[in-house]
Image 1 (cartoon, rainbow, N blue to C red):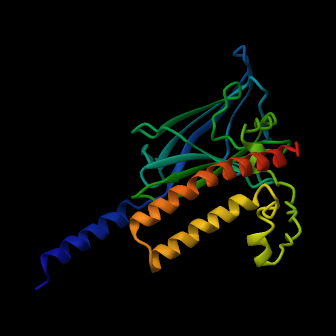
Image 2 (cartoon, rainbow, N blue to C red):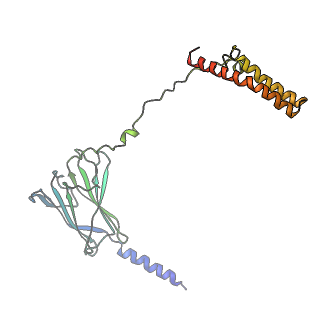
Image 3 (tube, rainbow, N blue to C red):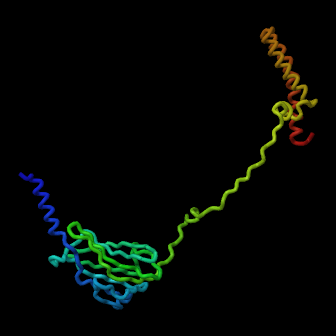
Length: 258
């Protein structure tokens, strides 16, 4: 016994095959009018052969009307998708413009060059190939080559304010300083960091600091805390005066007075 789901699927396939017919255009016609509503050109389109190329001025308007029908029954249908394709064969640019179709298959499209749609590709002196594309779930997709269209050359796009940031920049050449020459570590630690270390105005302060170091070592070996405080107080008095003298001399050397 054949399962019920198989029967349903078979009927669905048969229904699609029955309805999957081809689409055609009935009464395709174009009209070109000026800004004063004067008719410049009007004619019926032939799907077998393209007419003479159409030409639009900066303020002209193109009106295109047609009806989409089924070849089998001849009644108007509404495809799921209807587009006009504007293609520039010289540059390869193209633009797609959707077209609204009524449930009866009738469609109307207007192209006003005073306010061209954003979908219109950039143009130069080459014509645009205009074709109609129909897409449907129950009919075969169809494409009709309608006509060639001359439109005014488009203006160059305005430069973006940040465009200069993306230009190629000049090559960066790094300049490195020569390697610094350093003296031996011993002299850099002792003599060169204090240029006047052994000056007569600096030696007393240095000797008194050494005496404090010797006092601490003596305290570690033999002295008591009271004795260290006593000797340290005695050494503090000349150390203060020697330190002031050394500090004044160093300031004079730095300012160039001495």
